Structure formats: structure tokens, C-alpha cells
Amino acid sequence: MSYVPVDLVVRDAISNRPVEGVLVKVFAEDGRGVYGEMVTGTDGKASFLLDGPRRYQARAFKLSTGFKNPVYFDVLDAPATNCFDILANTVSPPSSTDPRLCMCSGTFRTPTGAPAPGLNISFVTRFHPLILDHAGVLTERVSAVTDRNGWVQLPLIRNGEFDVFIEGYEDVKRIIRVPDASSCNLPDLIFEVVDHVVIGEQQIQIALGQTVEIVPEVFTSTGRKLDGTAKAEVSWKVDDLNIASMTVLWDKIVLYGNTAGSTLLTAERADMSIVRIPDPPLMSGIPILVV
Image (tube, rainbow, N blue to C red; front, side, top):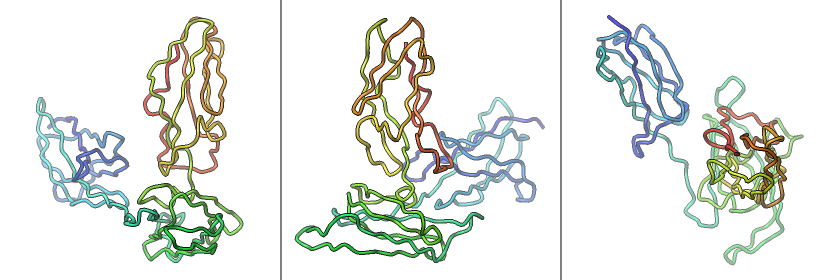
């Protein structure tokens, strides 16, 4: 027997897209011995070195995702390519059929990772009474309670602002802004943070002594687009200020070419008090190269 590389790729059963954050464990064919475990990355891939030729079984686990466990696969000796798919059935979030409402739902856990049942979450409107499709909406408190699985869902008016109070954290008030969407993940809404930054250019070139203006797009964990450069929520940085410096304005970033060379433009969340796991960089791929 010899060790050969084996790739297990987790894909969505409907869209065929790779699924990130899935724990994949490899067992002996009879399920007794464990040969390794790995969490899939953005490519949905979990890679192993396994003895071949031999049959194994794999099991996949992720919250709110269904798998047909176990999955059996036969590892062959090189030069055979040992790549196998694992199909995932991701749970689609409930959505509102009312175009004025957003169905907010999600799961809450205890510090042990177990579901948090019976958790009371209160929402208090920040807007004055309004007329919505000829119906009067009054200012009042709305409460929702998680079920035994830690799950909760309720519809809220799109674009509405609410004060949120969570049982056990009554002294902490969160202010939410409901997105203009049919559905939203409630934990992401309550603990909303900057999620990613989009800059069209992969490389920014500046003539010596000249300036270049860029207009980034900043999005939160609910998919809400923030205004302009979101300078209060995002810390913009040029690695080498001798090569290029910058001024962050409300609506754009102005880069100045100081000396010949190259450096990197980076961005990170200004408020790191809310921890997210996983927490990828704001800009996908490498930071933007400035030449």
C-alpha cells in the first residue's frame, strides 16, 4: 500500500457550488477507525493522504445542512485521480411573500455550542407611527422566543429601524436596520458588521506626483450597502506611505503617488468587538496592489 492524495469536495446538491465550513471525517469502510478530519475551505475541498487501493467512508457535518451519511469511496493507486463529491442539502431560509416585509430568522447557541431554547428577543420601533399600504403601523414592542432548537423567526418591516434587547443582555442595546430583502439571517442583523469591500481594480497605477480616485463599495453581513467609503466602519490603510499616501473622503479615496515602487491598499473592520468565525478578509483575494 502507498499513500495517495485524496480530495473530497462538498457541493450544494442544487446549485453545485462548493460549500465552505463543512467538517469532513474519513473512516474505515466499517466505520470503526478514523483516518482524519478536515474543514472545507472556500473551494469546498477537504484533502487527505490515504492508503490505496482501499475503500473508505466519509461523513460530513455542518449546522443547518443535510448530508446523506456515510459516503463510500474507493481510493486507487497513482496515477489515478482520487477526487470525490459529497452532496450537501443546505437549508433555505424562510422568506416573506409580502414585498414590504423581511423574514428575519436564525439560530442562537449557548457558549457550549448547544441550542439556546427559550431566549427572548425584543424589538422596539425607532420610527414614528406610519402608514404602510394604507394600514397604520403603531410604535410598540415586539417579542420573539427561540424554540427548543434555538431557532426563531419573525417578519419585520423592510428598511425599518429597531432597538433590540436580548434576554441576559438587557443592559446592551443593539440598533438594527432591516434590509430591503425577502429574508435575512437574524444573528447577522443583530450583530451586523462590515462583511466585504468591492474595488473594481485589481491593480491601481499612479503616475509620480499625480493622484487617482477610487470609489469602493462596502457591504455589511446582511448584504446592506453602506454609504460611500464607510470611513467610520472601515479602516483603510496603505502599507508603505513613502510610495503612496491617501486621503479617505466620505464618497471616495484619493491616492497620491509619492515615489516609484509598489505597495498594498488594505481594509479591515474598524470595530473588532464582534467576533465572527470564520472571519475572512474584507477584500476577497490579496489586497489591492498600488504601483
